[in-house]
Amino acid sequence: MTRAGFVAVIGAPNAGKSTLVNAMVGSKVTIVTRKVQTTRFPVRGVALEGDCQMVLVDTPGIFTPRRRLDRAMIRSAWANAQGADAIVHLIDASAQLAVADGNANGADRAAARDVASIIEGLRTTPGQAILALNKIDLIRRDRLLALTATLTQTQVYGEVFMISAAKGSGVQDLKRHLASQMPEGPWLYPAEQSADTPVRLLAAEITREKIYLRVHEELPYAASVETTAFEERDDGSAGIEQTILVERDGQRGIVLGKGGQTLKWIGEAARMELAEVLDRKVHLFLHVKVKQTWAEDRGFYQDVGLDFDV
Picture 1 (tube, one colour):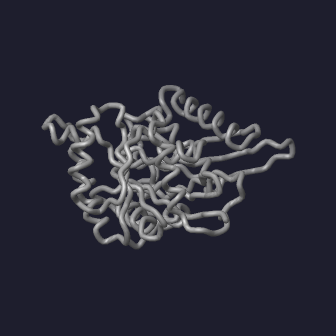
Picture 2: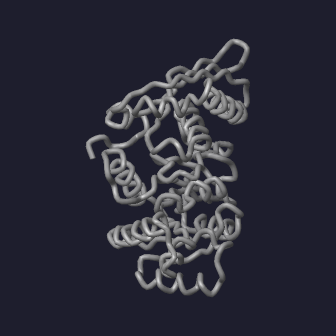
């Protein structure tokens, strides 16, 4: 008898959700950057553990919303949690302890507030979540145990795992436990499939990752990428055209860089990864366009599966 089910991975921005999903799947299915709120829509990675197939849903970070896109992302995260067979609440343990010690920076304090908000949300979610304390390699064990005791007093967690998503510590134990929680039933995807993301959307996400990796400090959370054309060529290669959307002229200059060098780097890095993912030669053509209202475009929300009317 096989097992199959859905696992929602929720948490504050930058808790390490995408890194954890990639680690459990065993390959890269969702983009990872230092920038908060990188994940904008649920990304499904398919992980195998013995006779069990788990669909791991990397959800957008849950935080205090300020605009329509924020609200849509948060609604999507909670909707996926409500419908999952198991929920993993991933917490950056180092940020929580920094707040407790009184030496937290702004990002740590924001993360702690988001964690408190998520705990309140879990109180109205059926069943108990699994608590995963991340980045344990940075913290003494006695401090982790004290933090665990504080968090489990909320009574929203059934089990606790201590992990380092980046280094792999504890990830396999968590994966095995999740597999045991999945219901009996047929697998939902072919055994060789590791992700459920349309190729045009995956290509756009890879390019967006490269943008943030290159201009993390200069470019605010105000860029999007659209795959406007995807062509299967006669020689077996792929021709991909994409438009990078920014909100202001100054941001366009940042993406282009002096003499177009920044855009050239982004394009080359994205092309190399796309060629590896698609297992073929890729011709990538990038254009940068100013569109102040891209985050208010109903079509964008439909393309990525978010609710525009939130």
